[in-house]
Length: 281
Picture 1 (tube, one colour):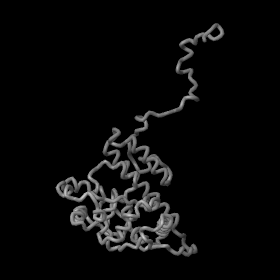
Picture 2 (tube, helix red, strand yellow; picture 1 turned 90 degrees about the vertical axis):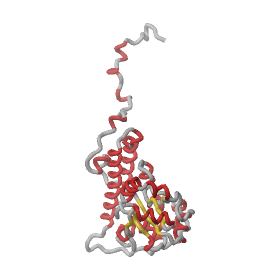
Picture 3 (cartoon, rainbow, N blue to C red; picture 1 turned 90 degrees about the horizontal axis):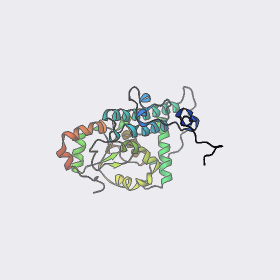
Picture 4 (cartoon, rainbow, N blue to C red; picture 1 turned 120 degrees about the vertical axis):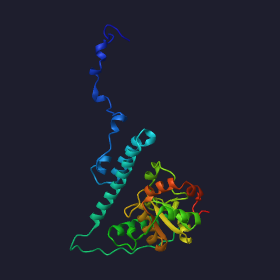
C-alpha cells in the first residue's frame, strides 16, 4: 500500500531511461537477424571455424529465417543450402588434410578390417565398420572412392525405375532433405544417408538385406551430385563395407539440381513412375 513513507511513484520515476538495462535480456528482432546473404559460404553462414557442428547449427538457424515458407526468397534459400554443402565439403577436406601423413613420417600399420559385413549385423559392429571405413578413406586406404562410381542421367534413371531395374537411394542428410521445397523428389527413393549408416544402421538393415539380395542397379543421389557429394561416399561405403558389387552402383548426374528441371519438363513420365522402390514391391 502507498503511504507517506511509500508515496505513489511519479511518472518520471518510470521513464524507460531509468530501467536497469543490465536486467533486461537483450534480444534481437527476427527481422534484424534476417540479414542479406552474399559472399563465401563462411560469410553466408556467419561462421569462422571449420567445424561441422558449427556449420550445421548456423544452417539450422538461418534456414528457419530464410525458408520461403517463412517469408524468405527461393534465391536466398538456395544460396544458403549451397553454402551449407560447401561448408561441409570444406570441413571434410580439412579433416583429410589433417590425416595426410607428412613426408618422411612413419606409417602406422592399418588395423585389420572387419568387413565385408552381413547387412543384418549387429548395430555396434556396423558402426565400428563405418567409422573404420571413414578413417581409412581419409588416409586413402579404401578400395572404393566416389570417383569410381559412374554417373547416369535423369532420363536414364527414370527409364530404369519404370522397368523396375533400379533402386534409388536418397543420400541427403536429414536436415538437408527437411528444407528442400522443390518437387518431386525421385519417386520411391529410399533414405540412406552417410549419417544414417553411421548412427542408426539398425533402422536400415531391412533395406540393406534386400539390396544385397537384389540384382537391381543402385542409383545414389544427393542435392548437387558430383564426387564430393554424399551420393558417391554412400555408394563407395556400401560396396566396401557390405560387399556389394561395384558394377551395380551409379550416381545421379547433377543430383536433384538436374533432376527437378528434367522432371518439370516430363510430367507424364513422372506420373508413371512407381511410388515404391523395386525392392519393396
